[in-house]
Length: 351
Image 1 (cartoon, one colour):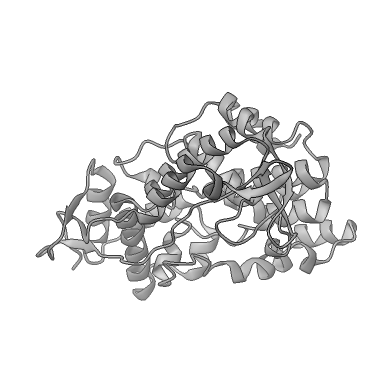
Image 2 (cartoon, one colour):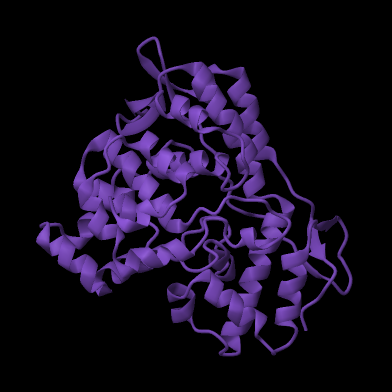
C-alpha cells in the first residue's frame, strides 16, 4: 500500500477496506504522482470547512477519488474504468464547486471538468504509467463513458454512491457509522436500468429506504443557506483577486487551499481579508425575504439539486425505489422541493 494511504486516519482506512477488500496495487503508483497528490490539499467541502459555521471531517478530493476508484474496482475489476474513477476530479481547483459558482455554473457544476485530459497529458508521471500499462488517455480521461462510474441524475453511480457514503460519515455531517456503511454497501449489486444499461442498485427495499432517507437530508444540506452563501462568497473573493492580478488561474488549479487562504488573509486590496475573517469566525448566517441594505448577500434561485432514486430488486425485476416505496417517495420529494430563503447575508460588505 502507498505512503498516502498509510498516512490517512483510521476511519478513512477502514472505510476503504469496506469499499474493496483488496487494494489494487496498480493504483498506488498513480496515486503517488504530483498531479494526483495535489488533490489531497483540497477539501470536498467546497471551502465551507474553513468557517466556524461547520463541523466537518477533513476529507480531500483525493480521498474521494480513491474511494470512487475502489468502488468501481469492487464491482468491475476493470483497470481502465478504475483509473477513470481515480482521475475524474483531477482538474478540481481550490474550493471545488465554488469555482463553478465563479463561472456561473450553478446548475451543472461541471465547468472545470474540461481540463481533465489536459492535466493528464501534461503529467509526465501519469503519461509514463499509462504508456507502460498500454492504456490510452481517452480510455481514462472521461469517466462518463462508464455507466458504473458515472451516469445521469437520479441514477446511482460509483461517484454518487461514494459522496453520499462519505458525506454521511462526516464529510458533511455525521449520520452513519462504519457498520451502517458496511450494511448499505453490502446490499448493492449491478443491475439493469430501464434501457438495459448497467447500474448500481439495491437488493432489499429496507436498505434502499435507509440510504435514500439520509441522502435526502444530505441533499438539502448541500444547498442550505450557509452553504450557498459560503460558496458564492469564496467565488466572489477569487474573482476579485483574479481581476486585480493578486492570484492567477494557474494558482487556483495548482496551489493548496491553505496557500490560497494565506494569500486571501495577506491581501491588502479592498476589504477582502476582513470579509474572509468575518466569514471564517461566523457561527450562524442571516436570512431575509427582502433585500438586505449595506450587506454582502447571496441570492441564488437555481442551483444543482443532488438526489438519487436508485433501483431496487423486487420479484426478480428492478424498480425505482420512488415507485414502490411511499417512504422513499416522501424523502425524495422533500429533497426536490427544498427551498432556501431569498436572501442570505452576513453583516459586512465588499467595497
